[in-house]
Length: 357
Image 1 (cartoon, rainbow, N blue to C red):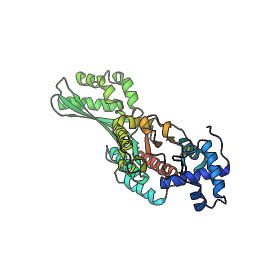
Image 2 (image 1 turned 90 degrees about the vertical axis):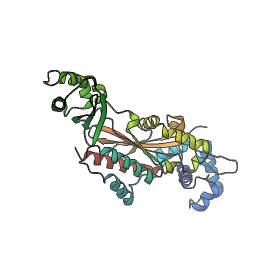
Image 3 (image 1 turned 180 degrees about the vertical axis):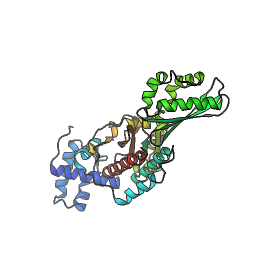
Image 4 (image 1 turned 30 degrees about the vertical axis):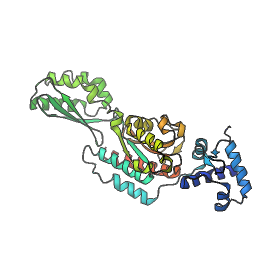
């Protein structure tokens, strides 16, 4: 069984089978096509076309007397060569804008609210599982640092990073410091490091603070801790998930073993984040901004638990920072709608979180 290029009639029938299966979740037969689509073809001719598609590996017959369903290869051909993507309808655009626009950009730390809201509305509109991965921070611009003494042995360090991002770390102290000492060190750090990327700070902090006139013990503690203070957050901490209730309600996941595998995958936040982060450009669906939307289908996904899923993802940008959003759904998803939604969401997120720059 080998794939081949399809003629116009075969492409038309394959498109109808996929579009019908998306809606009904039921195998599609030749009689159904003949009765519901004005192709000018007899039932027998459609049946012959379906036999050719099956021989070529684009559709399969789950039961002897049943109609046909698309294979991974059929979905791939459809996504690459058949589907067309229009712009999102105005009502859904307004819903996205209202949800991610409700948070003021003046408040540091509001990025978490925006990203969680984005995940929720993305799941609700797509009726699938949605994932938002906050940006990697190595190229983010450091703005300022604050230190708050929690006790004689603990201190909270708060980093304000480009746009709305804040990173908070609690450090254990092996020295006693006064509030004035802390303020002096904070002033020097902010004066010498503001405007650098976190990656630049990790590489050069010792040299940049070498001759500063402040408390040496606290300064050295900050330098020794730079790998933690100015590093990336763990990938699972950057993950926002919503829409589990929608995906488990799909017919594909009604069987207990399948829904169990799905929930196990969703609970493994590290693997979920890696799935969306590593979802590569397996298909070129170009956004107006020129950025690819990636669609991986079935066994193209790297995790066994995702072999029954399609993942649609795309990056969004905030200055030099890059995050990612994704939709996880059954292979029988509405691909055109998923691409429209994720395209608009990515552009909206980029615009919203870049407003503070």
